[in-house]
Length: 393
Image (cartoon, rainbow, N blue to C red; front, top):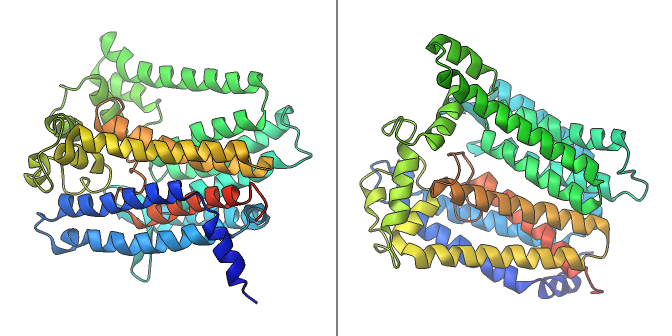
């Protein structure tokens, strides 16, 4: 029999600061998705804000479900769900819907979703389960190797779509989880060294041949060793050389910076952002990856700072929950979910203001996207599940 009284008690004990911050961000997201799309000539684009409202309700249902569900039971089925997600990641490479040259989406009965988004949260739950086991030996190489395999398989499959932005999220979140779990510093520093070496190698492969005066054919041959696709290399080169291709690969970066800078202190006003209305911010990405640019142009520094304040509130409350957690599983789950959200916020805003290369990383709770909204709200629901069980109900 369903114990509604107990469920209501759990909801009452939730961290309502987090819930209010989430609600405000989602409300802002709907308004600015509408602002980013209302002037489009395509009817389905103009109605995206209505679809976002639907996804918000679905996400909110997941948020409540995971808040009520005991996080200590989540790990029991995690390996089966992990296997299912890996199947979907392979399947999307074979039969996924191809959009803008990438196979990232699956269509089921008219509903499109991204398995890579599911892969993030499921992989993090599995990692939390592994590293929270009482018999785990985190100082042994074979344990660390096993952890790297668990996260490496979905990482490579997502990278093959290609979706470099989503794949990037796995790296810092896994590192932070390992740090909190107590993995010895010799392993962590080795990972930092290997990551630094990989970045230096990629940059050297892209720029050193030109500096040495090699032919264009040789430069292209060397660039292939970086492992990056042509459009990814273009984005990185544009980041370091903004004036190289201002009307091509550098267009989005330049127009985003103009939109953010032109907002001033108070912005140009709701639905008054000229970069958006005149199409300088492409309609295909203004409501997704560049929603922050739309907000910054229309609401200026005040609106931008308000967003950062709300995200800061969620992240700070999440870190407090991790400290309060009664067991390692709860602590690692909260660290995983909050650091995932932090990485999305940091990367998205950094790329829109020109501090990082352009990557397809959406802004949580604000950017348009059904799968991403549901996954984000489920992650925050898990944080609430840990919070309400920090003390006896």
